[in-house]
Image (tube, one colour):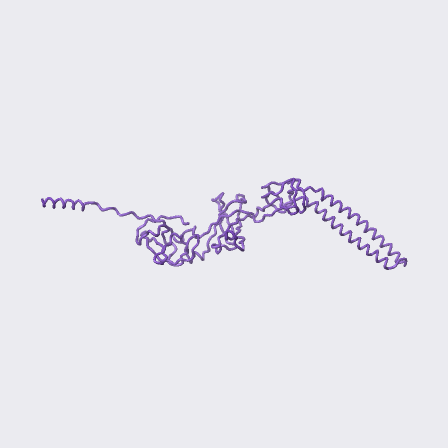
Length: 358
């Protein structure tokens, strides 16, 4: 009986020894990136709106009722082209009255000149006193001043007859209509808005944390959302001296140096700012998810040539919405893990997967 039991145990042990070993676990896929080889991390892309560099409202220099408008929104206009007209009946009457005053003053002045000449002849014959002659000379000066005054007033009235017509003061396109025929407008009230299409630019809001990357004259690349396959060259033209009180961002105007007919006012555009080369050579920008901390030390997981994960202590610099600057501990061209770094184990064999950087 004991012999049979021993044989049964031996058979069980022999069967257990013949069981095949479990296969090794496959390498774990890990999202990685090459340090210093990411265009998304060494540049800043902001969204803005295409606007004209020069845009002005056109208005009448006198008040009145609009009787005709010659243009519509989107119309191309040339400098000096008629845009709208006012009812000029009243200003024409004022001009006629001013001219009547001029003729009256001219007659009075001619009479004063003739009267002074007669008084001078009488004075030469000793028929009148010097004081009487002085009075006539003063009257002549008064009439001359009066004539100059009414002539100036007549010129003003004449100008106002021309101000009843509104002309474009520049070449451009009508972007807005603010008054219609039949409407009574005041002096200086905007009637139309004209934008100059010869110079277009993109207005973007730059966060204050990235203003160090933006300088006047900085070259940029611009792409329209309507046609993302075509890139335009641009240059920073103007930087607001103060941040917007609501957004805490700085308004920056970027000139489109090679704009064509496909660039329309009001379009949405992406503006790409390149970082300075000096910054790239001294520091390396990595995603925030690639940085971890252990025992008070900041670490990143470097993937070596055998695709094994190795922790490495680094020195972290400035943090931003784009990532974190690493000042020491990494070299450009090294491969690091950028996701799931808290679950990695030293020496763990991984399968690198190139990931899109934030």
